Length: 306
Image 1 (cartoon, rainbow, N blue to C red):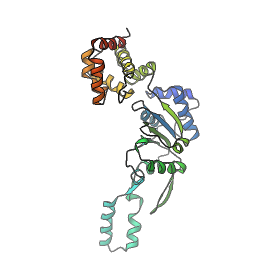
Image 2 (cartoon, helix red, strand yellow):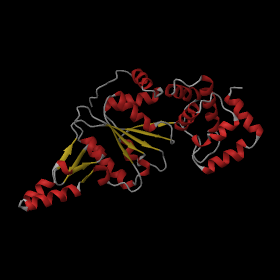
Image 3 (cartoon, rainbow, N blue to C red):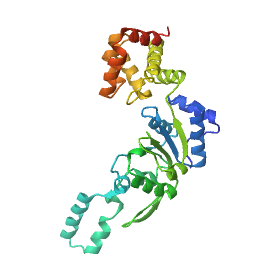
Image 4 (cartoon, one colour):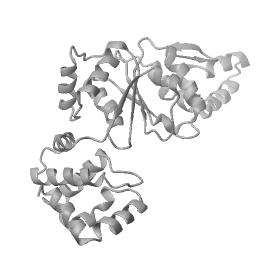
């Protein structure tokens, strides 16, 4: 796999990811380095909002190559992920050809050409010909059915697809594949064995602070520290969905847009929807945390570093 930018050491990966405003620890940088060197898919697992998808986005910028994303969902099938024929365009050309008096075999040969083929993410990644293999992001594989997972295993085995009307298409150079999972269900071991695996956890305080300040360099230090401490404390509550790094960044962006430089009780209440995304979690926070003056004060004092 020859990408436009290569790395000689793991430290170079860490530095490059930092340049791309993604704070990668050494274990993640190592698995990225090896995935590129060995040409193996990368399987990233972790809670929602911890930066799994962002890894592929940053990698596409670092390697100066195209990102092709397949968003998985329940009911996703092979045809949706691979290709389909442009039936309206085919029908139009059939009618035009019939008016011109062409025979049926000539018409069939014509309408099953590449110009009538609608390439979906998997076929697009395999047939990419821009001089550099793309990054193929298969996002949230745990949302897809097990049947699609088995099909995907076949595709990743040899990076080739057979289209009955055209023939077999094989990748000149396999794409670099990133598979993500939020662990809503167990992914089959056979798929994981084909990949290099890495678990992305909620970040430590230091790492989350670095992520926040890297993404928003203009944020005031006091506000960045307060937001980071508050989010670290908030994740200790047993919510249905604990807030991830994406919520930290959303909250910081909202506070910056409001031109606020410190947290206070009313501001936390007003911007709660940036942090918690389930009504049950919001209600629990208000009833068990924010309604108690002593607990509320303790949260804000901890956010201030007191």
